[in-house]
Image (tube, protein in one colour):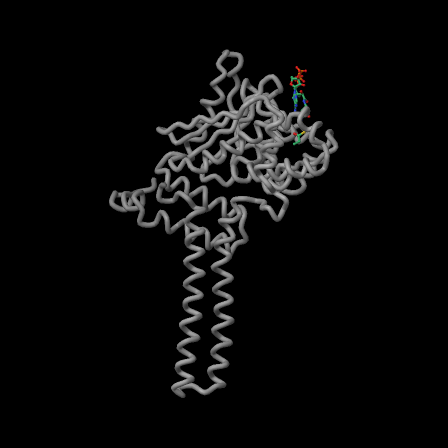
Length: 358
Ligand SMILES: CCC(=O)SCCNC(=O)CCNC(=O)[C@H](O)C(C)(C)COP(=O)(O)OP(=O)(O)OC[C@H]1O[C@@H](n2cnc3c(N)ncnc32)[C@H](O)[C@@H]1OP(=O)(O)O
């Protein structure tokens, strides 16, 4: 595991240690007070007052130690209490086969490419692909040397959402809720990966495909591409976390326009409202070179992933906590992440050199 790796483990361990420390301090203070009372050093009234102070302080400290633990728990959205039984849902989803979600990790560059691969259905997500997506996210969670991630679709188009054949078969409310929790969980974990992620949108990103694009840190569009939240036309709203993420990306009014109008977002509109972060150059399909857009995306992403993995991953972590947590908790999380790089190899190397930021 790298220096900054295993944030989850780190916070769990830290949270437990802090809670133990607080309990130990409370017990020691109470025992001390008891001894003083027995020896007659303090009156019963003073002892009573001090006990109250210890209890209030202890409560506060325990609460704040539990606070830092709650951030680590946030890496999985739902639990059994919410009726979330992942294995049961996986089994149900596997009944709808077809397509694949491919993952390629490049050790030398620290970049990974995740490809939604179901071209005969415009890369729609079959049930089996939803399960595969979650598995790939798990793989990326334990890829401790990674720095960047490109999410794309096969054969020149991004993703047309969930496979309508599977959707029809699980259109009852219970199954819909299960699929919703499963995909929200998988995409939230994708968004929280300590990797700088970019959705490479070629062709169309429709419905769940548009939601998938919002789970990345950035969106790059090819000139003829379209992102469209078509949910309204399906009598739906987003359920994979796309609405909550869209509001944070473009603000509530643009989000309402995109959802309420099922507007087609081309690169120009995408750039204007802040949904797109860049437009790639014209040309890939005409040249018969399918990899051109991917190469451009890799080059674009490499600007933000150059440098030591522990520093890039730490940068993503502080942004993730800043994006999701209230300020006080985000500041505490930032302090913890800061502690993983301060005095670290990259920091010491930089200090030893003659640094000038020109
Ligand atoms: C989470 C909520 C959701 O995601 S709800 C699903 C939202 N998505 C949709 O409604 C997409 C519906 N599909 C379309 O609008 C069109 O197929 C789009 C993607 C625009 C492509 O049009 P066009 O280039 O003319 O190709 P086409 O329609 O002939 O499609 C090729 C084959 O792909 C299939 N396909 C496409 N999308 C899906 C989908 N989401 N689920 C299942 N199959 C899909 C089409 O049916 C077509 O298949 P076939 O060649 O007729 O066998």
